[in-house]
Image 1 (cartoon, rainbow, N blue to C red):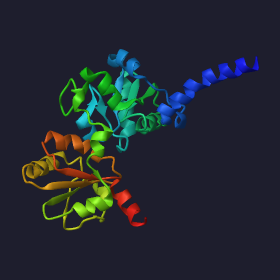
Image 2: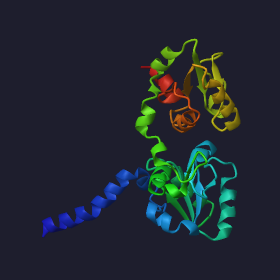
Image 3: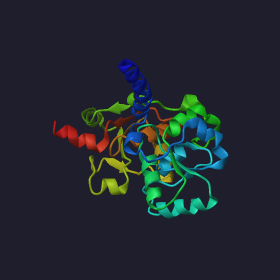
Image 4: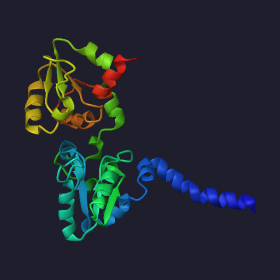
Length: 259
């Protein structure tokens, strides 16, 4: 009888542990209700989908009909409150299983007394692979899933801070894509680098057109190595093949100096 109890208890507990392992944010934000991929697909026309990532990420890849309201928007609560007037469930999403922005957005909305709030915590990549006909990649839908870049695709272009620095030569162009608030007065390579945040899209497009065909190697760094994942789509789309990213960005650069 005792063995039977242990078996039943373990059987009930294992799916919960497995789910928490796949979605670590669910344990951190247990009060946030979530949508699964097929549930969102079934109710696609009857919910309001909100992308809480940056504008650059949204313009690169997003769910059809989604509204982009970045989590750090000054008017986030007011904008979400305005959406509530449609009396539909509001579903937030971000990049994937380990991205917590969708949970944070749901909690932020709930604290503002906004009801009927959910998180689609599988994120944009799971969605684009499962329903490419309801996703947009660089302005094109349906999404060609062969063009979705994997972590392995990114890894091929990562350099350690030391390797990054040693690659700098007369034919290298250095690009700092951090936001102005992140950069402040600190430049890793003063007088050598260009400063263009990823939300300065027109300026970035002009810069990349100048790089293409120049024979230069483009060296890019950001704050923590996460923003460049999205820039890679634009580099590939612009036909730029000679580029590298600093692994871990500025944070990893300073960490490497102390090791």
